[in-house]
Structure formats: structure tokens, C-alpha cells
Amino acid sequence: GEDVEQSLFLSVREGDSSVINCTYTDSSSTYLYWYKQEPGAGLQLLTYIFSNMDMKQDQRLTVLLNKKDKHLSLRIADTQTGDSAIYFCADPNQAGTALIFGKGTTLSVSS
Amino acid sequence: DADVTQTPRNRITKTGKRIMLECSQTKGHDRMYWYRQDPGLGLRLIYYSFDVKDINKGEISDGYSVSRQAQAKFSLSLESAIPNQTALYFCATSVARGGTGELFFGEGSRLTVL
Image 1 (tube, helix red, strand yellow):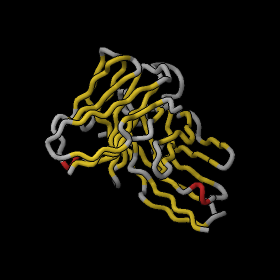
Image 2 (tube, rainbow over the protein chains, first blue to last red):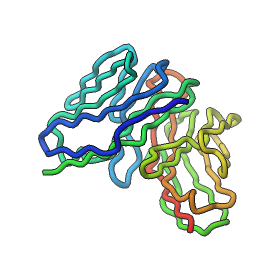
Image 3 (cartoon, helix red, strand yellow):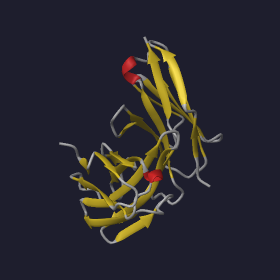
């Protein structure tokens, strides 16, 4: 069935780069997404990538897409304590009717 | 004011009680969704609706029902709550066509069933 997998935890020091990885099963998606959930809050779209792109850069964020391997990654440069949150990878289902979310990666940033 | 508003934000109830979680939106979106979040399990889709007359089951609809009272309102009901329905529930909206397919989320309703 359709699935999105990502590791559950990542711990980094302030100023380092963080890389969160995701694999997905449905390859027909037009867009793939990264959402951020801060403590006690809902999810907010962090960034997305169009499926015909390999890379998208937005300030400190870099998204890499490898369609052949169905692998998506999010790199956060110069990670700050304010980046501590849960990050979700999301892929539209085959019918295009809803998003399938990974289990979420909890990013912990220590100073 | 939030574009997607969920009420109540927190609720504690007992096994067997009927519970309704409400969602209203001012974004003018046609599509609305209910997801459930459990630690270590991520978000799972319960129900979704593409317009007032369209209701669809998601991955984990058993034990839940929904009502789309208007374009802006989508409520989730638990007819007889059970402890394993303790979770954080999110309502979300999206545009029907065009755009990037982004979902816009409410702040969540935390439900505890004792």
C-alpha cells in the first residue's frame, strides 16, 4: 500500500546542518511536501517541491528529490534552537484525494 | 483570527460518551479533512469531504462519523468513545483545484477518553 517512511529522531548542535530523510511509495505525485509542527501547535507547510525538480532551495532550507529511488530529503543549514520541532514528509495518495504523512521526525537542537 | 478553527481545544470524557469535535474555516476552501495524530504513528486520515454532499472514508474511519453542515463547517463525532480514541485530532482544508495541494491545519483538538 501507499506509505511514507522517515526516521523518528534527529539530534544536532546549534549551528550544524540537519538532514531529515524520507522515502515514499507513490511516484505519481505532482508535489511533495515538508510540514513543521511546533510544540502545542498544528502543522504548517514548511516547503514543497514540484516532482519535475531535483532540488529546491529556500533560504536555509534545501529540498532534494530523487525520483528514481523515491527519496526526499530536507536540509536545514545553520540549525537554530527555534528549529526544534517535528517535521513531517507528505505525499499525495494515488487518487490525489488526500496527503499521506510520515510518522514525523523530532528534531532536537542543543546549544 | 485563525483561518481554521477547532473546538474544543481540549476535552476529557469517559468511555461510552458521545463526543463532537467541530471545525470551521474562513479560507473559502471546498475540501476539508479530519486527521488523527498519535505519538510515533504520525497523522492518519479519518474522513474527508470535497463539498457539502461529498463524504469519504479515510484510512481509519471505524468508530467515527462526520457531518459537513456547510462549506465552512465539518464536524467529527465519536458515537461511543473508547480509550484508544485518545489522540490529537486535526482538521485541515485545501483548495479544490489548482495550487500546490497544500493542506491548511487547525491547531488541533486534544481528546482524552478515560
